[in-house]
Length: 232
View 1 (cartoon, rainbow, N blue to C red):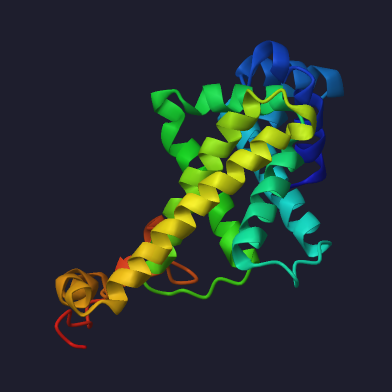
View 2: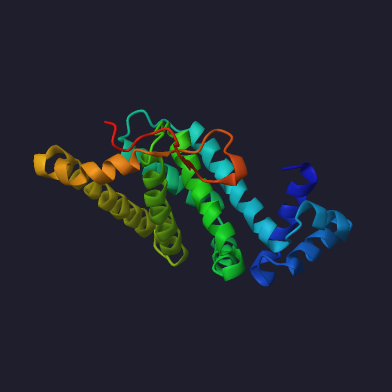
């Protein structure tokens, strides 16, 4: 983000609680800075949508910075995930700014952009914590955490407990639910009958690969054309 784009986003934040992430907020922010409106539109072509996405990405960057300053070496991996989600939510600080973003991205024209922003956040969490999966697990990890993250954000928006303690308890319960599912999945794989029943689906899923470092056409992944599902 350029200095001008960052300054314009900063100026917009005081208007968002009143005008939402909207074109009116973009105009007001540019006027506050004495910035030509044409330049403001060049920096944020879709107006409020691009401002909201820039604010979201700023929160992602803050989360990564806070994770880098945290000592997670003694934590279990599930606790590292919980810490990352908590740091990401705390990075937002102002509930009203997030609430306005949730409202914006609930609208059908912007739902895809909102979903992509959440996906990018959870992908960043997994990547920052050292995830090295390259198969279909790359997707299942991120899809599962997307649900955990989204539900926790919604809970946090209505949480009035001191220091959001109820939210962090809710987050722990959601992660425990996920870990319980993983334990059941592991038990099925260890069972001879379970292995037999899941062999076919596992073979098909083995064709799926995580996105290449420079995936073409913005696709989220690919199916290997050279992998034979029947090969073990």
